[in-house]
Length: 542
Image (cartoon, rainbow, N blue to C red):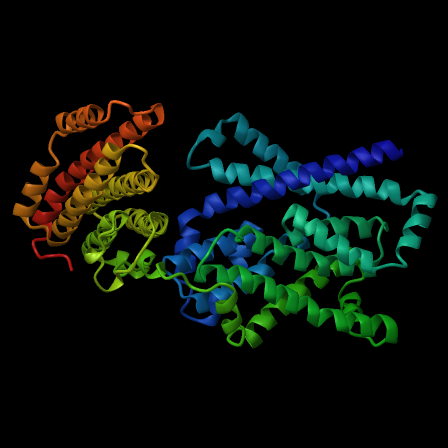
């Protein structure tokens, strides 16, 4: 009996964890850009932020996922940081949907859902790009609920063992262990809702007391906040303030609940737990209400202390100097309502992105007022963030159902965006290679020549990309013509000048010249694609 019950619990936990991860991944994919676009537009009123937060939390079942989405939106300046905070706070409340779902007796529904998704897989709907996310999400939900049913069954069987219940009664004398267990479990499974669902299954089987389950929920809330912080540990800049903010409001929410719990437990004053028991005689559902109260406390902390916490957030996660370069200056979500204007704004934004290229080689004049020393890694990070914002904007524009000419123009812009991304990556790689020490004087001279030559070429190209002057574009096409003979000549010159090159220097020579050739070749393709844009936009891009 013990072995069967243990296997049932472990199998149920495995299915449950698989379902939680699958549901979060597929619901995020199902929502996709629509969720991002909706979040970026949910800043008009507090009610809109409330609704956006609750639905995003319920859909993704992961405040870490919502935090990452909001961080990317704030990095791209598509939503102000102050507007993202209430959305994130209410996303915590949205995760309670799974917790309350776990309190229901849904065995017939689960079996029906398993059957329905099985037929969907049999009909190969999972291979359809249109239906795959919905089918996979349904299967993940069915797996989650089926696993929970296994956990309940196994826990009930173990709960019937007298000696085990005696041990658990001894453990119940130390309810603080539940708090520590909640923190550790949330760090392990990366979800306070998941830990709460497990606690509900255990309390329903009388394996833990109500006090233990309550403190487990409190600990899981803090553990969930720490998980979000760890997810963003390698990130830098103002957008990371959201992750720090999530940790703080989670801790404050629990800190507000703990004194109430202690007063109620040791002095017998009816407070939160008495109110929860009055709402529902079902202990599992009572724990669900405790979880909801904990998330609402975090929302209250955000509403009361959101502005007061800002100086602390800026100290813990200060903005980076180059963040302004990564934020779009022209495109914004509402611009897609006018496709022709939106395309012009994309042209301007891509010109800004192009202006970052000379920075890899020490030339910052094209940046104007934003000119400042940037490392190649910083320039590449800014370019990639800005490029992703442009690409997301173009995808949203393509989804508007605009006329054919607009869709074709969007495709052209996307092609240019991909070429720009390739040039930036190659330029950053070349700059990294040139920063390495050279043993050969010939290689050192080559590195300096490439830095000066490419810097000047890209600076000229940035001016042409901004002005779209036909003569400048024609000149650049000639300058970026077939460079095979030039690159071969460079290699022969270096080899002739220093015949004692080591194997490492040989590899460095071919890496430098190959990257140079790739940059020039890709630049020519980009300049060629600017010709139709020059015809469409005769006015200079400023």
